[in-house]
Image 1 (cartoon, rainbow, N blue to C red):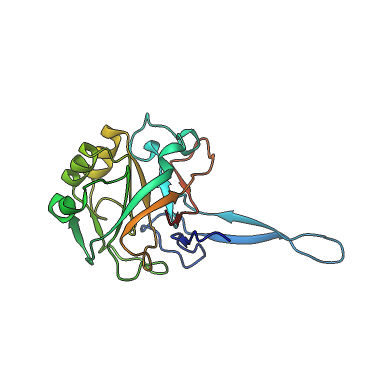
Image 2: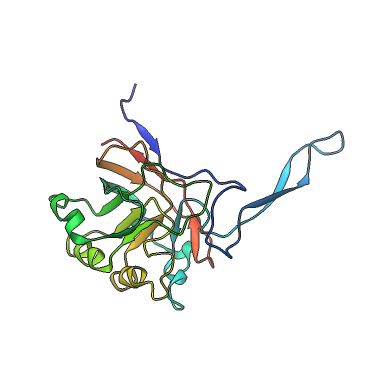
Length: 210
């Protein structure tokens, strides 16, 4: 029997899932329901691709960028490091992570919340300073993730950190749930769906012990 442990780091998705104000929440209705005349339940679901745990595609922040379904999968699978940098708001600066980069694998996930917000919206959340992404790129990191709705502050109009990952062709995961994951190194599996024209994709993100 394998001793490999799996951590599910995906947010639950339902009608209570928070979204940026004005974005499309999760809604579901039943088009078919089990009965004597119908052998199946079939629902219709409407949501923003940024609901719950998701991967942004470059199309989200670059009008000429790739859609989610065209992203190479390699960055979303492989060794990663989980860091705990707990704060309710504000930027994560290079000095917050500089002492944790020795031997870093090409993926970094940051836990900033004592408990990830999976059922209520707040504009106060941690995000990355763009200089932090400069440093991570210098260390060969190709994917960053965080347990908040965005790698930029909620009020940002310039999306400086998104523009950094565009420049470096890095991938990003948002709305992770890392509440019960100890700091350390793991294997990440978080594949985007093959949505060929979408600006983001839901993922079922998991970590496996190495």
